[in-house]
Length: 93
Image 1 (cartoon, rainbow, N blue to C red):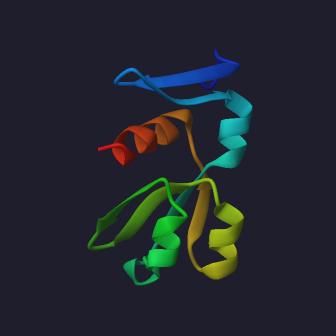
Image 2 (spheres, rainbow, N blue to C red; image 1 turned 90 degrees about the horizontal axis):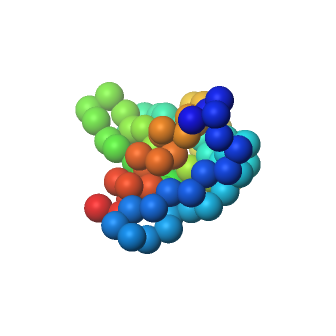
Image 3 (cartoon, rainbow, N blue to C red; image 1 turned 90 degrees about the vertical axis):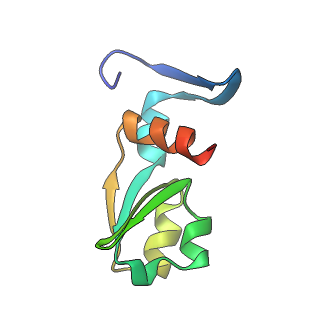
């Protein structure tokens, strides 16, 4: 989808989860990775979805600049369309 679509609409269970330009979504969202010691209620509230393991956590956020200012040691990477879509679906579970 990264190469073929300009506008994306995600519908899950009859509900529109987002309707955005692909480039806007790719600029807006970041994959957040860090040690579980950083997984405070503050950072949880800034993420659309996250998963925790014994090695750390991985999440998706559209608040990357705020997360980086609060927790400079977390890793931020560009999210793919698939990352974003899965986060939206998992967030609704």
